[in-house]
Amino acid sequence: MPRRTVATLATVSLAATVVSVLAAAPGARADLITQCIGTGGAVTVPTDLYVPEGKSCALTGTTVNGDVDVAAGANLVFTDGHVQGDVRVAADGYLDATGTTIGGGVVLAPGGYGAFLKGARAGSVTVAARGDTTVDSFLFAERATIAGNLSVAAGEVRLDRTTQVQGDVSSTGTYYTDVHDSFVDGALSVREATAGSVVCGSAVRGGATFTGNAGGVQLGPNGNLDGCASGGYWGRDVTITNTGTGVTVDDNIIDGKLVTTGNNPAARVAANNRVRGGVAGDQAPTAAGAQPRGGAGAMRARATTGERRGQARRASAVQQAAAAGDAGLR
Image 1 (tube, rainbow, N blue to C red):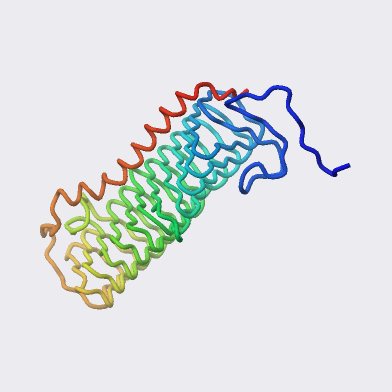
Image 2 (cartoon, rainbow, N blue to C red):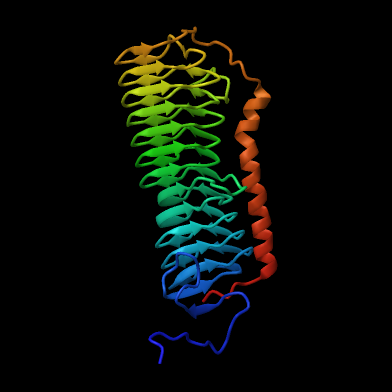
């Protein structure tokens, strides 16, 4: 007799299926899995949750006492809910979490479509490198809290509207990584961002390193990458090296030293920066209040193009879930 058997259910819902399996979803435990296709409300799911390939699940006020797996091409829209474990998103999968607490981490696999966190909380967030997939991921966070580290290696990344990262932020090989009106309690590292990095109106307590960013680096206003009302606070050293396109440092308080070396052209460091440890390296100083070289249209495009991708995917997911009807979560 087999050491482990698969239970046969008497009644199988077309929308939600609970099965005992050895491996019902990639990365899932050999335990009960609840499948979600459609919509769900204020119920507690005592198992892991699985959104099947190409399907959509829209939940409001739901509690999941386990992990969540969003399969390839699937969508999860989660509002005012709670996940005890991790949320794992496969290639071309999408996560939209609003007012939701995720006790574990959020992980986007290579080629994951994206994640939008609005007023949400997660233990950590990881966006894997694209690899040989054709989808370039995105991560947008607004008024969100990441209790641990944020590690991103693909796509568009924007932290905005008082988002807090209580650990480190590490970005390598993204399209861009921007931080607006937000807080990073640990260190910030941005490397090899194709369209560069912008940090405005934000506070970074740890050291900050920007290197190899072909699209440029803009810390504060009056740069050529994005619109920005004010500079930021930096708790330790800020190092900007090997940057193409241009570097602008304007209206910042740096409680360490500023180092700018190997940038072409040389960094433009405004006179209104307050740098406790002094400025080292090559700079081309510019007066405060200088006008940005980029046009307003380009700035708006940087802020909205990726967000439109997320909005369109969310609208499609909600529509698909509603069409599927009640997911039968009990």
